[in-house]
Amino acid sequence: MPELPEVETVRRGLAPALVSARFAHVDQRRADLRFPFPADFAARLKGRRVRALRRRAKYLIADLDNGEALVMHLGMSGSFRIEDGVGDNIPGLFHNSRGKEAAHDHVVFDLSNGKRVIYNDPRRFGFMLLVKQDLLPVHPLFRDVGIEPLGDDLDGAKLARLFAGKKAPLKAALLDQRLIAGLGNIYVSEALHRAGLSPRRAAGSLAHKNGTPSPRADLLAGAIHDVLGEAIEAGGSSLRDHRQTNGELGYFQHNFRVYDRAGAPCPRPGCGGAIKRIVQSGRATYYCTTCQK
DNA sequence: CCGCGGGCCTGAGAGC
DNA sequence: TGCTCTCAGGCCCGCG
Image: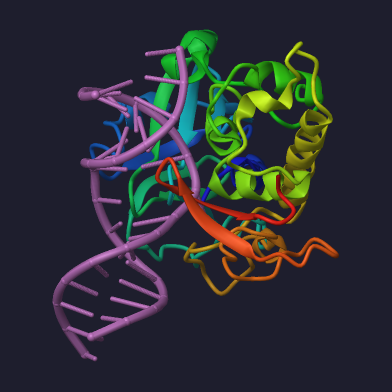
């Protein structure tokens, strides 16, 4: 499921249930997801209060009252849901009636406020860790993570500098979490189409030979900012997520201009091209060969 | 250093 | 109906 907009949507949905609650009971139902759980995971969480729920890149970080942080990553198929009727229709979450289990429910948090937060992950590419908050910046997971693409951190000049000298195609450079954090396969294709740039173009070509940013860099920075912002507004994108009948997960998938639309006409007014699917670094890329150069 | 391919897992969908 | 094959929103590792 999750790229930055989906993780951010989950964060916003979970925060009302988690923040300022204590973990009354933690049910860890298997020894590992992608990685083994930390030793004594459930015991170390029990009794702790959540002070804040943050997002960095595609990670959720719950700051605990003992100086530790619960770090959570959703992998490809991870999701959270809140039970006990709390937070109905919060985008990014789905709700069962209390007590109804689903396949692949791997972690259950029972909170002091009576709410139950359940982590479900069929493919188990997600994981949870406990890290001292002050060690997060030097932790291997975060040490090399790139800039956040929302807010003021990302502009054309910054993008051109990050990509300077890179021969890798824009598609690969944009997926590289060490450069920009949070883009994934969907939003890279979407941002490149909005910017009118080919995914095959060398990343270094966002700067001129003398190092000054090309106007293309500004177009791309703006497109990234716009597409992520719009996707968050829409509650993220729901593709294969299984969910209960109650409440859509997100509807940005209806606004995809190129992703998973091979053969469809290019949505850019007056373009007249068709969307093509290619494979780069083993992953599907969708773009219009007519208007993306 | 860089880019690529394989691997980790399960499930959905297509084709036969 | 059921089998087999391909593909999937992420990321790490090892290879050349």
